[in-house]
Length: 379
Ligand code: ADP
Ligand code: MG
Image 1 (tube, protein in one colour):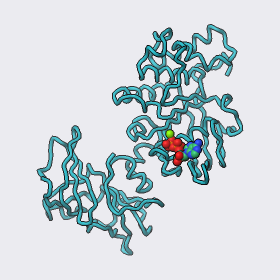
Image 2 (cartoon, rainbow, N blue to C red):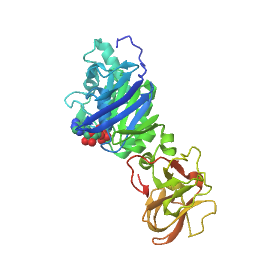
Image 3 (cartoon, protein in one colour):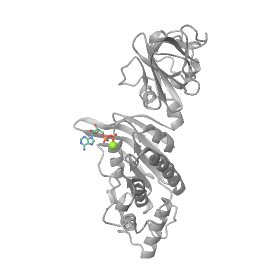
């Protein structure tokens, strides 16, 4: 980029097309495709080992894929060497040079560019300003807290005005409060600068807080690529439903008359549940968020509600809410989450009926590799 380039270079669009990477025959990334818009903040979310880092490293150019293509603003990327990809990176473990000052660390990516000393200083100052460390230039890295070090790493990643910013668990080493603050900072900064960001995390809250869209990965497979809202309310399958937020999940089948037949003796009424439900599919999963599940004395649930009977196994307080864990006859654990300020009177070992408005049920697909019958997933 020339020194006369506009100071707010907008991010590039990234196309990931059928990218596959195998290690010893097992796919770490399995035919993943993503169209990321310029200026978009996308998070790769998934459990450990789901292929997030592998995909990010392929985008960065540290590794090459076995197949598929990568395009940056429509230009083929796989044959471009790392240092020419115009990409900024932030890792979990800062990767700063401890013997250099903050300024020298931030200036490092500019060393290969033909910039005047004044321009270089201006850019470093700008980057430090952006991460809200304007007066820290002369400090040594060892004199900074973890959060400050990660801000320096971020300043270093943006100082060369990359077209794409890649972050791999950038906040993973920080404590909760600092992480929350930096999540907001990074979102603000990336939007102000118009950066295209691919962020990696296993923390669903972080993904939901920061992202325009989330790419949920499971065993290298892309489960869903959607906005946080869609992912939460319209999970593509039971894997997505189980991973994002807390959920009660049932497996069942659609009968000829269109009603759902589920285990656990659950009565669903009215029979046609949710718009867009995949009626006609043989096997389905039904998800109900615990916060939409109420507790009644046995048999006392409203007539029109879906219901399941069980025994209270435990009551767990978590700040403003508490969860009541109920075990059904077949041994499935279901959850009702309620406002801790307005708790239902229940005791362990008490027989209850869990019930909910049928409209709270989300019917979705059964993923290829799911097994269980009915379960709740806590996050
Ligand atoms: P994540 O970042 O989501 O935790 P990774 O991308 O690091 O997952 O790993 C995905 C899978 O690929 C894992 O099963 C991991 O063991 C495997 N893997 C990653 N890198 C290598 C490698 N260099 N050699 C062999 N297997 C690898
Ligand atoms: Mg990783």
